[in-house]
Image (cartoon, rainbow, N blue to C red):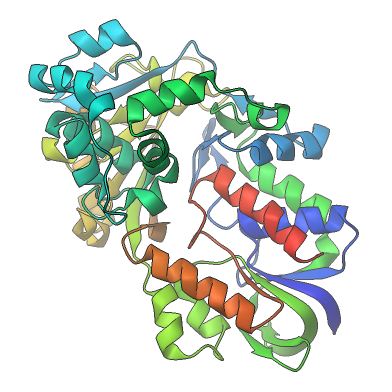
Length: 452
C-alpha cells in the first residue's frame, strides 16, 4: 500500500488532522490500535442519563476550536454553557464558597486572607521573575500570596491537570500566565492591557466559553470521522512501527492477525509520549527517553446519576476541592445544571474525580473502595441524607493528563531535532502544545498543513 501521509492515532488530534487533510483533497490513512475512533472521548446513554466516559466539556479557548464548529456546519450542534449558571465553587473548611467574580466579591470572600488581599494591591509593582523554570507554586506565592495559591490556583490546577503546582512550570503548562508577567511585568496589569488591546476577527472567535455538543462529545468525533471518510481508517492496527527509508517511510502494522505494510512520504503521530518508543524504534534510546519520560496523572472518574435530586443546589459549573482541605475527591462537575438532556427533569448528573498526581494511590483502590469513598464524600459535600444514585459508573484513566514540568523544554527541543533529522516525521499529540480540547484541535489543524 502507498499513501502520502499516515496519521497514527484516531483521538481528537488525529481526527482533526484527518478532517482537514480530507478537505484539502490529500491522500492519507489513519492507523488506530483500538476498534473505534475518538480516543478518550466516548459518550454513553443509560437509564435516561447521557454521560461522558472521558472529557466532559471543552473551552472555546482558541479560534481554531470555533472554526472547527463552523467547518463542520450542521453535522453537529455545539452546546455553549450559558452565563446564567456561572458559579465555580471552592471548598474551604468543609463549606462551598463561590469563586469571586468581581471586585466586591474579591474583597469579601473568605477564600483569601486579609493580608493577601492587601498584598494583591502591590502585585502590579513587583519585579518579574527571572527563573524560566520557576514552579507555579513559587510564582503564585511570590506575586499573590499563599492563600491565593491554596484556594484559587491549586484547585484550578486540580481541575485542569489533576496536578501539583509545585511540579508544573508555567512557561510550559500555563504559557499565557507566564507571558503576562514576562511581557507586562504583572498579572493584573497585563490582563488589563490585554483586555484593552484590539483583537482581529480571528482572535475574537476564542470566546473562552465552556462547550459540549448536543448528544454528547462523541458526536463531535463522529462528525470528524465521517467527514474525513471512513475508507481512510484502519482500526485494530496493532504492533505499528515506523521505519525511515531514503525518501519515504515504511509503516508496518498488524490488523486481525494479518500484516500490513504501507509506504508514505509523511508520518504524523497523534498519540501519547508513552506510546512512542514502540512506534518509532529507530530513534536512539537516549533521545526517546527525553520525550517518553513525560509524567502523566492517573485519574479515576465517577459518574453519578439521580432521578430526583435533593442535595446541594446545583447552580454552577461545579466545585473544586483544594489539596489543603485533605479530601479524597478532587472535585465535582454539575453537568445537568448547564447542559441539556443529561438527566431526568428533576434529577441530576454529576461527574467527580479522584486520584491525580498527589493522591495517585487512590487509582489502585478496588471498585468497592472507590464506591465507599464516593458514598462518604458525596453525602457530606453534596448534603445528601442518603446516597442512593440511580446511576454509578467508574472509569479509570491510566495516562489521563500529561504534566508539563521542568523537563518540557528538553522534550520540545528533542521533538524538533527529530523532525529536522527525519524529514517527513511530524510528532504531535498532547506531549506538547497544550492538553485541552481546543489545544488538540488547534494542533490537529496545524499538523494537517504540515502534510501539504
